[in-house]
Length: 283
Image (cartoon, rainbow, N blue to C red; front, side, top):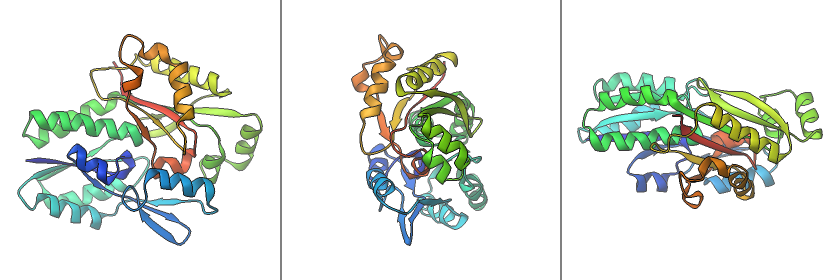
């Protein structure tokens, strides 16, 4: 038996993970003096309620070696093998901690660095489920995931630079100038890191740039897992993006059936509300 274990940076909550047939290990999120387990004691919606309405800026912490070891011990107790999929090693020390913990479970635990996060990490997990249904060889599945993860694209429009500034990702001066000009940055996850792909003025132009970047990388492989993602307490921006980018979906899939996921705390801390993105395997 092969079990899939994924961290909560994938934006998969505990209840949803159970329905999917996988296991989720949560990161910790702190708001002032309160600590929560991401996706367990703090839902994605509750996170944004606290982010938007509260005074404290959240902090997330990596999953340490002890917690990974505890999870590996529990999941392998019945003789099962485990494939653990983590947030990009370039965004968090979580992968490194998982690798260290896995040394005590040689041949039983295989750790895969997704080189991604949010929906990008999620669709690698969904592909893992497909592979496990076809193969009982955990090492082969892990190798296939390491090969296919290089084809994953995650591109998103961020509504405001405020949260990137609060998280220390950009300077206060740059953020203030951007907010005054209503600049909407378009970011991508490239080689495991978040990078600026472009900047526009206004949501329609940013959505158009997002669509152009999807087309530039070769388009979406609709035979593989894919999905949209959004942040905040409303899906208004998501609906607008779908309308602006309908050329991507027409004749290929029903827009009403495109999976859409609310971004969680790990990425939501930095992008804030009203971000919209797409994650897919390029052709």
